[in-house]
Image: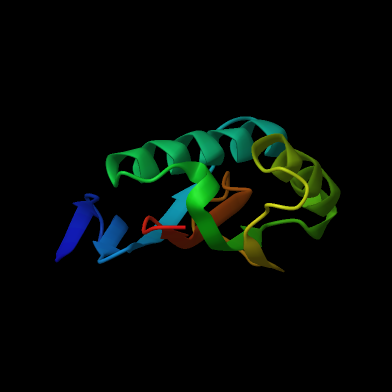
Length: 115
């Protein structure tokens, strides 16, 4: 069964397909990078919860940064949400965003099946 969590835009914030949750973009809101990345994790947790999946089941993420200089802060914040040896697989890159105030976006895949 496929279930979608729609947005008002041309994408879903998540699509569940069997044991997997495919997360669409989650962007940060706030005045600086640290505020925005914590906001993204709040959104990710909420979306995953709606799909019956905890954040700890996130297995792969793509992180898009506006400024590569934010990479050390991103690393630090990831360890606030994941234990040292339990981080998701990750790809990080830089890009420009349509919204000039956006400093990062994250998408990914979570597994909600049996461990």
